[in-house]
Image (cartoon, rainbow, N blue to C red; front, top):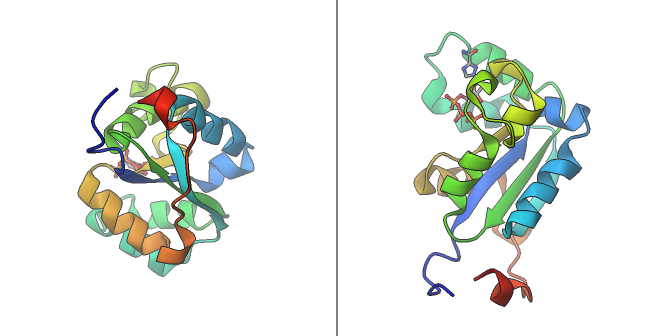
Length: 155
Ligand code: RTP
C-alpha cells in the first residue's frame, strides 16, 4: 500500500462528440472504473464555442483550430473528472497518442478510431492543465467527495 500523498490527483477527461454519437461512453467510463480511478464529476454538456476556444487556447494558431472547435461543438460531450494516484499520466496512457495511427491496441484511440480529427477522447496533459480545465468545465458543487470503500483494495 502506498502513502496517501498523490491519491487526490485529479484529471479532466471528455468523451468527444464522436465518442458520444458512437455509443462509446459506457466503455470509456468502464475502463476508468476498472483501472481503479474514482469518478468525482460527470455531465453531458453541449459546449459553447467560447468554452472550447478557452479550453483549446494554446492551439489557436494551429491550422486545424477552427475545424477542432466545429468538431467539438457538433454535439454533446461527456465531461468527467477522475481522481487517483498518477491519474493524469495514466489517463493519457489509457487514451493512446493524439494520432490514432500511433496508438497501440488496448488504448481507447488504438481500439476505436482512425483519424486525428475524430479521436473520441480528451484528457488533460499535465496536473496544471487538469486544474485549469476542471475549473473551466465544472463548478465546485458539481465535484463530489464520496467515501470509496474499494480504496483499501486498490492502494
Ligand atoms: P486532446 O487535447 O484532445 O486530449 O488531444 P491531445 O492533447 O492528444 O492533442 P493536442 O495536440 O492538444 O490537440 C488537440 C486535439 O486537436 C485535434 N487535432 N487535429 N492535425 C490535425 O488535424 C489535428 N491535430 C490535433 C485532435 O482532436 C486533438 O485531440
